[in-house]
Length: 303
Image (cartoon, rainbow, N blue to C red; front, top):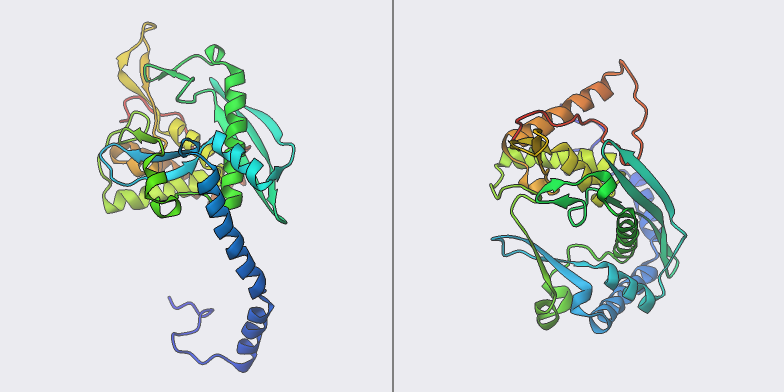
């Protein structure tokens, strides 16, 4: 159906419309934009000259040639000291889940009159101290201080990276020598417990839709969204533990490895949740931060 609100290609623009567009363009402070470009170029030089390769991490997946750089927590604090970045006292919140919890931090970061809001969190099911042998460990056996400290560090890193636009950086940002000395973190294909099976075009489309929904439910926090994705794609495996119960197969944290039945189940759950929300039969309250709105617990044998 034709969208009457959009003019046809090549349509004549009225004098009034042209005048309004010109007025908006005239209001743009070109000099300010140029100054910002100069500032960002200066920041780039400072980052390369005054940070160390170990302040950064190169992320890649096994068998992949592609790498992208991210600022680490220690590097973020070094950058903050170099540039004079400030931040507000964070708001802290402990979000309880069934069998786990999340420490979440939020607040504002500022530099040269520009401020951004950022979130940071860490789950008691963190892959470094919340798992053992591929399975989650009991909530009470996890050091809550470790969870708190990592959540705070993630908030600092996210805020500074967002403020400076330091995301998915390539070799051109650093130069060949610096780039070659940055530590590489290689993930097994499939994220946590996944496989390296490539997605079909249809699977990629479904995975992108799933991730957009989850990211929205997470308030735009990619770390929290990854935790939610992991929980939603966790399922009982065929092996049993000492207690006679099936061992849980860890879920995925990367949408690029959502394939097969696991993707179909997740996509179905999200589609059902969207239909219920848009049906108007029952208006649901907005989900609490950190909740897994739209997801059920994994079903037995879903691989």
